[in-house]
Every structure is written in C-alpha cells, then in structure tokens.
Image 1 (cartoon, one colour):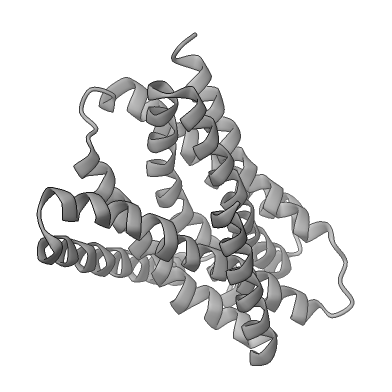
Image 2 (cartoon, rainbow, N blue to C red):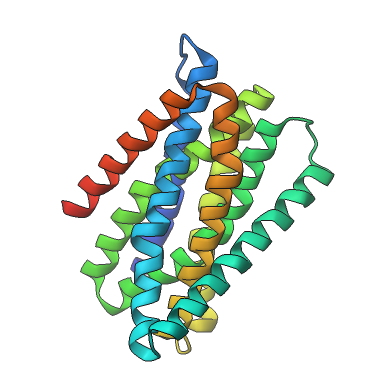
Length: 248
C-alpha cells in the first residue's frame, strides 16, 4: 500500500495533461487568433516554468555540491544538449510526419518533448511521495497546474491540423502516461540509486528541452496565427499567472 499510493498520485498528476484537450471543444469566432493565443499561452508557461522552477532547483544543488562556475558549465551544457535533442527530434518528425503541416508538427513535437519531460517528473513525484506524502501531494498539484497548458500545446495544434478530436485527446493521454511510467521505472529500478545530483542534472536537461521547443517551435507557430501584440499580451498574462502561482 505504501508503494501504490505514490504511484496513484503520480498517475493522476500525469493524466491531468488530458485536461488541456478540453480547449479543442471550444468553438471560437476567430480560429486563427484562438490557435495563436493557445500556443502562446502554453509556450509561455513552459518557458517560465523552466526558468523559475527547473533551472533554479537544479542549479542550487550543483552550486552547493561543487561551485558556481562548475554549476554554470553544467547548466549551459544541459541546455545545449536539450536544445540539440529537440532539434534532432524535430528533424525526424519533419522526415516522417504523416501530415504535411507545420501546425501538426508542432503538436507531435510537443508530445515527444513533453513525454521526455514527464518521465523525470514522474520519478520526482513518486520519490517525493514515498519520502513524504504531503510533499508528494504538493508536488503533484504543482505538476497538474502546468500539465494543463502542456496538454494545450499538444491537443490544439494536432486537432486544428487534422480536425480529429480523438487523435488530439489520445496524444495528450499518451504524453501523460509517461509520468506514471517514470514512477514505475523508479519503483522497480531506481529507488535505491536516485540522488540529488542525478535529479539536478535531469531538471536542467528537461529545462533545455522545454526552452528550445517553446522559443524555436511553439512561439514561432503562434506568430503565424496571431498578431505580435496579442502574443505579447498573452505572454505578459502568463507571467502574472506564474507569479501568482509562486506567491500563493
């Protein structure tokens, strides 16, 4: 029972990605603006979470264990690797994508990158829940809040590129499943080996992935559908949303 409850908490946190697919059932008056603002919102949240949560959490421990210079080198190294992997996955999707649409590519790329992002999140949620159930629940709620805009980044572009609601919802579900998969992996193989150093490096690597996809792909696609003034407005609103979450 002690092992099953952390697994259940991680599963619920991960599947919350599906909630983001609710946005495909809204019928907007201006579809282009809706696509653009949805993408800009999800990209802003992903970018800000990387900068305000993932990077500080990973960097602080590395600086404590080594020194500022070493921590900085590892930080930029992980961001570079994350950016390189994001671009590599992007090229593969372009090569093999079944639908010739940049919007569809962004949705599939978001799903692939966020699956990689959700795996270590699942590990962290599971491990923190095992150590302290209250801490695990708090972490799971935080993950649920940012999994919803991640679901938007997957569902909205896939739906408007294919007009297939089932495909869009399925993509968010598959992405969310990678979180409990990470928990199962930690339960079976890693629970006796994970330490703060490994977690810190994983956090910085994931931050590199999310920063790359947010700037190079999702924002770029959003600009095709909405005016820059609207994108800037959504980004500022997202900053206020994140600040509110951090404070409260």
